[in-house]
Image (cartoon, rainbow, N blue to C red; front, top):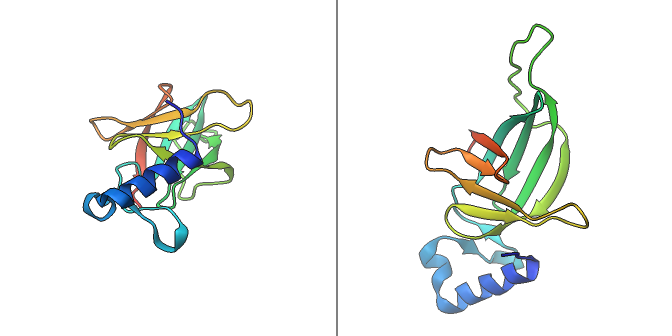
Length: 138
């Protein structure tokens, strides 16, 4: 299932109409903006691929920020622990599917939408390709 910004707006309006917003704690529509109040996806997640460390941040204002990969190890093969996120590679709005899943829609010809799913052990499955650990809670 694919979602876009208009689907999200419609979903939020339906929730408001049904009185679900304040009861469920999912969304707040203050000032005409969509603001996530709580969801397990919120925070910064880190994973490794091809010897690099990547971070993905999910914010309360429904943004997913992907940070460029940086070397995972120094010249002596010691792991590098970054205290910052580095440079943002892209920023996109995400759409909530349920309590454990969100979709980050792709733009242009960049492939399929990105499914991000919380695992029972607290890690994040990204696109069924990477498994990330949480490094910061929002």
